[in-house]
Structure formats: structure tokens, C-alpha cells
Amino acid sequence: MLNLMTLHYNVDWKDYTLDIYAGFIGIDTSNGTGQVKISTAKFLEDKGYMDRTKGTVFSSRNEKILIKLWDDEINVNYTTAYLKYFQDTWQAAYPNISNDPAILGSLYNLGHSKTPHANPQSNWFGDYVQQHYNAMSYLLGL
Image 1 (cartoon, rainbow, N blue to C red):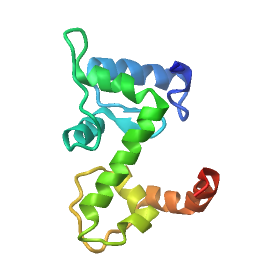
Image 2 (image 1 turned 90 degrees about the horizontal axis):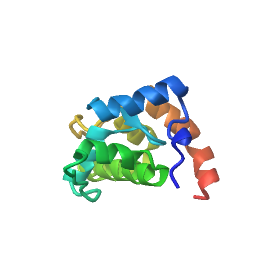
Image 3 (image 1 turned 90 degrees about the vertical axis):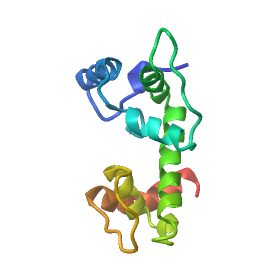
């Protein structure tokens, strides 16, 4: 069962409430464990990395995606699909992409507007990902 109070681990109750409200009025908020934006989820669905969410007479596609993103398991699937998208898109230009957590983290942080090239540079978020990659691998049993 979905526990609404565990949807946002990095914010207080005011930010949590604002994210829910903002999502329902059409603001492109980041949600859940992977902080996935509604627009990113739609992008991944449109690219075929996730099943397409359909709206209904009673709720829009955005609202349905927002509710899906609140489920941590589904949210992690969108997060994983986004990383897979970057690997697929950058593989030809930067063959080491699958083995470079700093670059994957940077791209995840920057979004999908970057053009693939042979010499990507990490940003602060990618450096943070790299710094904690071994610990996370250990915790995940990888």
C-alpha cells in the first residue's frame, strides 16, 4: 500500500504538501525517491522506456503519472529507465558511459537536453554520485 508520508524523504511536510498540490495544478514537480519530474516520466514513456500512461475523463495523463511517481517501486523504475536512456543515447559518442557513474549522475541531474559527445564532464551532482557509488554498490549487493 502507498504510504503518502514516505513519498519525499528530503523535504519537510510543507514542501511535501506543495509538491502534491503543484503536481495536481500542472506544475512540473520532481517526485518520489528518484525525484523524477512529470515531464521526464512522459518523455520516457514517449520514447518507449516505460509503458505509456493514459489519462481518463476524470484525471489527466499528468495526474496519473504524478500518482504513479509517488510509488517508490515505480519511481525507481522511471529512474532506472532514465539511466538506460542516457546509456543508449551516449553509447556511440562515449562508449564508457555505462561504467562512469559521475557522468550518468551529471546527465541525470542536467536532463536530456545535452547532446552526446566524446568528452563529457561531471558536475557537482555527478561528483557526489561517484563519491558514494562504492557504498551504494555494497548496500545493493552489486
